Amino acid sequence: MLSAKSLFQEILDNDQSYRLFCSIAASGEAQGGWENARIAALVPASERALAPRIARHGADEDKHGRIFNALMKKRGLEPVEIPPDTDYTMLLERYGIGLAHEKLKDDQPLTVQDIVTYLAHSRVTEQRASEQMDLLRKHFADHPEIGRAVKMISGDEDNHLAYCHEELLRFAHDGHGRAIQRTLRECALAEIRIYRDVSLAVMAHMGRILGWSRARAAVLAAGIHAVYAYERAAGWRRMVSLKMPERRGALDGPATASPEFA
Image 1 (cartoon, rainbow, N blue to C red):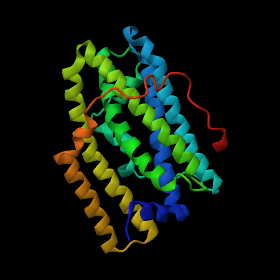
Image 2 (image 1 turned 180 degrees about the vertical axis):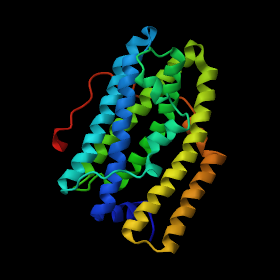
Image 3 (image 1 turned 45 degrees about the vertical axis):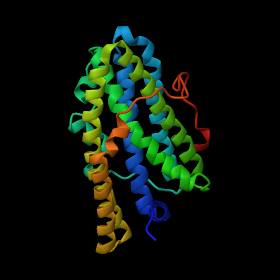
Image 4 (image 1 turned 180 degrees about the horizontal axis):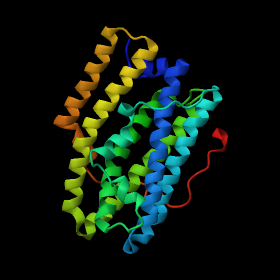
């Protein structure tokens, strides 16, 4: 039976597909770490109190990248260069979602609107990350090789999502509500399209590694297109709603260490 659990188990059981999966994940997390670190350094004076939380977000992403690299190292595997069509983070940037890297490479302070844009982009992408890690935690929390990593990263992603909700609600209270809703909608509609394209690319690369039949590849592609159709019709709305999280101040304090993966 073809299921999310059986599909990932097949990827996990093959060194080459596992290496590609971990490499893609590590690359995206490292990129996210760099982006958050630069944003924290460029926060406008009026929002300096937010800088430690943004820096914590970046430190968590860096940690996740190290964890995925450590998981490969445990098997004696080296990271592989990821195919451009699987680079979710860079494709988002290319399509104008979030803050442009050219702006982040500059030393000019960001504006409050830039911070609102960053938080709206993060709220959308962290929704996706939280859901994906929750799925892995559901099926692999007790797995002897990846279970501890999955639980740690999943908890962090939940914290990141809570932080985005809390900060966006604060900015909405300060008069940025319309800009937030407009940016959230734009980001969500773009993200679901890019996620579809990246998912199709990743499955194509995995299929070649694992020798999937054309029929199986077609079934998986149809499933990805079906998810996109649902998200395009209504599912995107879950990415734009805002509610105060149960856990306030989720990113207060330093990032937690991960010595078991070092």
